[in-house]
Length: 251
Image 1: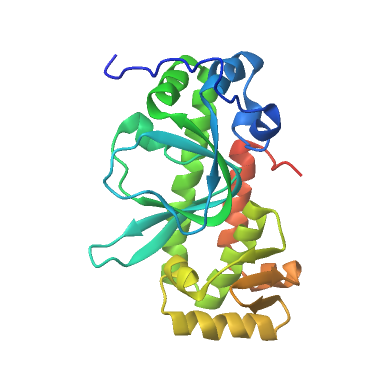
Image 2: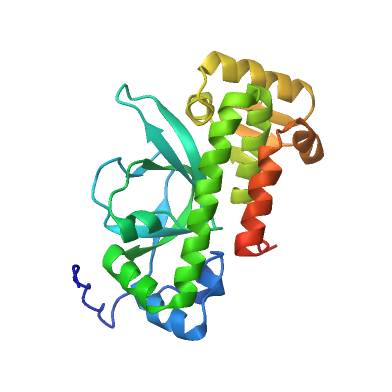
């Protein structure tokens, strides 16, 4: 094989408990045999907001299965400007396609504090090739990321900043599982591909409509139904495709 497998960890290594594994939508669908194979190679790590997990063009060393928090996938231009192409939470994994097929073109940045289970790249590839059910789950999730990228491209071109903002807030609430989460105008300007003053105007309008409360870098969802009415169709398209391919999210 063109890669070498890491040596098995010693008895003193901290093994990830099932309570963490069941929080990830991919890992909790594994069979007992599959879980027995991958669990010794999973390591729990903290996710800290704004930390770059992987820069565009760098070699990938591990894949990430988030169990909480949220990771943004970004397309970064030579000028340093960036725009979000997808977000990943406890519904999936980050780095799977790159581990299997090679180069990672985008940047992976933590958008909200949380935790992830990491797995060495070589061990992930070995498990992917060995276990058909795991391979099927990973392939289906990669299809979801493609849907996100395609829908985001159409959304940026066709929909208003306000409707995109509402969609992004809904997706973030789904990923994080909380009505309140941290959010800065600078970060949101990258996510939406607009200037900070535009973000300020639109966020103020959504707040004045009674849909959110936004202050001191934190946003609280006050009226989810209202946000759904304000959001573009992309939110329901992405959510429906995710549930169809991966099964309903754990409640």
